[in-house]
Structure formats: structure tokens, C-alpha cells
Image 1 (cartoon, one colour):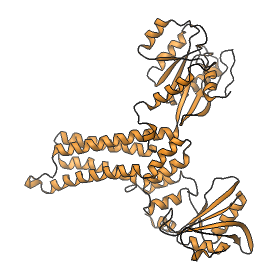
Image 2 (cartoon, rainbow, N blue to C red; image 1 turned 60 degrees about the vertical axis):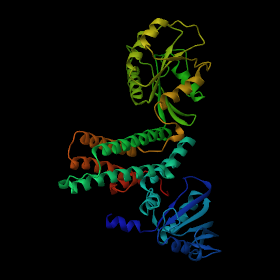
Image 3 (cartoon, rainbow, N blue to C red; image 1 turned 30 degrees about the vertical axis):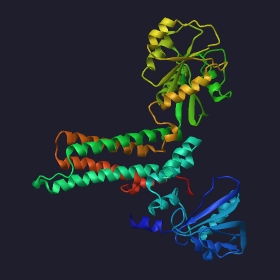
Image 4 (cartoon, rainbow, N blue to C red; image 1 turned 60 degrees about the horizontal axis):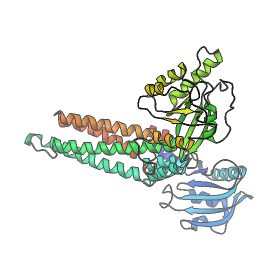
Length: 462
């Protein structure tokens, strides 16, 4: 760590810990070696902060000179029994933005420094109270929009991912130690681990990494949600379906085709799964310039979607454009929907069966709501197929998922080298890369630049 950073890490920091805007209560946090002394300078109350034990509170006033700024409750937390493992003070004020700003200014004038984004959690990491995986779980918990996402983040904060990483790290370090010990005694032809044992151990670690990655992908879905796009020819009922799924009139619906000229987006909660849904313009042939621009945006939305809802009109025969859409989306994750089930069907069943092969479709009526409960279940089934249940999900960042993939790739290379009879030095080199990857998740081998990128995404005050 650079000297300048060490100096900053020894400062006493302060920040508003509650969200912006007016509220009944707002909290100012201080952390660092002089947190309690600074609090004493600006607090007049029933107790002297310097004499208060950890987790003791006192009623009083925050003052600046002879001016009273607010009536507060001051809580003292002494090192190491605090969030950062430093001395900490939390001041519960009235929640007006001006009041909070004045109390914060008083703390800074008394010797504190304004905290940087995520600096309290960063100090908790640097002090060893939590590892980097738990620190990232804190950010995931704060950002959670659903109960399921919060539970996945809490598993990470409680150390579930950290424990798995530690166990894998210990297993791989033992394998590396055995390999290197064998190198030391190569002339005596002594092996501390056989190739077969090594391969089994590395394959087991790779399987565990795959399980973690799958649980992390599930957690990422819960936290970030999915992108759902509705596609189909004009006047097939896309806007009606979007309104039905949102359970509100979000998009204008009209009998005339081509009402939607742009991509319209909104969000809803699908039984704990955040969904960002897009209604798109039809992709008509010989379109006007404005319609061509809308069509380009439709294709962009389709490319970015996790799941496409391809809507066909069962009350009319298939058109060439329907066939084109079926062909263009066949390699995408999609659900085929035959809309207007409240009307008589005019679709050629034999042609549809030939075009779809074994792919299933669902008959719905976006207008009457027929089939929509089953559609919601089908959406969840498509998204979760092959992934663990949400009850087993772990909050994971894109950074962590990429590192897990890199670790698995390193182990695969080590396994291949072992099977091909290559030297222990080459196997050990790939094994070290895998161990280094695990250290980037726990924080043991992470760079200062990566730490900056991670913590600057946090809110100030956490």
C-alpha cells in the first residue's frame, strides 16, 4: 500500500449514512482514531463521549461554537467491536438535509475528513473484519430490490462464498505443496502426490467452482433481473401483452397497426425476479424511414434480451413476416405465444408444427388474460433452467464470476498437463494461477486499482 494511501486510511472519516432527502431521522457516522475525541468537541449532553463504553448512547446537542445545531442521540462504538474495527460514533439527528449537512460540517471542522464512497466498508475489509467477497455482498445487499435478492446477498455477507473459497484455496495449496515437494526430491524419484490423485483433486475443485459459478449466476439474475422483449409483426397484440404483464396501461393500444414506433420499457416483479420488459415496434417490409429507425431499435433490444416472447396471431394465417421472425429467433432463448385465443383460430396447424419441430408454444389472450398465469411460470422456468433454485443463490458480481471462470480454466490446463505427462513445473504454474484467482475473490491478492474500482461503486457513508 502506498504511503499516501496508508495516511488516508489512518484519517478519521465522516459521512451522512442515510439516503438523501428529508426523513424523520438521519445518521452521521465517524470512524477512525480520533472519532470519539471529535465527537466530544461538537457534542454537549448527559455523558462525556470519552468516558462512554462501547455501545453506550447519550442524549444531547450538536453545537458549533455557541450555536446549537440539532438535538441528537450519540452512540459510541469502541475498537475492535465496530463495523470498521476502529473507534466509531453514530449521531442520530433529525433527518432534514440542511440539519445533516450542518452536523457533518461541524464534524469536519473539528478534524474529520469527508469519507469516500465505500470507505467504511473498505476499512472493515482492510482491518480483516470481513473479506472482499463479504464486502461486495454488502453492496449487493444495499442494491437488492427483492426479498430473494436480499437473501442471496445475506448468504454472501454471512461468509458462505468466503468459506467455499477458503476450502478450495486450502485444497489447491496442499496440491501445490505436494507438487513442489516432489520437485525438491525429483532426483530421489519421490512423489508426494500421484498424477491420478492430483487429477482427482483438481477435477473435484473444478466441479466445486462450477457449482459456485452457477449459484453466482443465479444470484446475479436475482439482483440485476432479466431483460424480456416482446417481438412480433404489427397489430399482433404486443402492447396489450405488455400492459397485461405490467398490470397497468403503460403502452397505447389501438386497432391500427404500427402504433408503437419505438422501444417502450418498464419493470415489474415476477415472484421475486426483477424483470425489465420491452415492447417493440413491428419490423415491416418497405417501411418508412422513421419505421426503419424503430426497427433498428427493435433488433438492438432483441440482441440485448435474456428472453424473447415471440407473439403470433392465431386468428389469422401465418404471414411471411411471421415465418421470418420464427427463423431469426430460432437460436435465441424464446417463448412462442399464440395470441388472441379468445378468437377462432385460422392458423395452419400442420405448417406451424413443421416450423416449430418439437418446440412447444403457449396459447394466450393478452386481452382477456387467458394463459397469462402459465406464461409467468414459463418465463421463470426458461430463465432458471439448469440453474440452482433461488433459495440456493449467492450474490455475485460480474468480476467474481469472471474470476471463477479464469480459475476453472487454469485448473483445466493443469489437468490436461497432468494427463499428458508434462513436467510438474508446468502443472504447478497453472495451479498457482488458479490459487491467485481465488485470492482475487477473497482479497488476498487483489490490487489497489481493483479495490478502488470496487469501493467507488458504494454509496458514501457505507
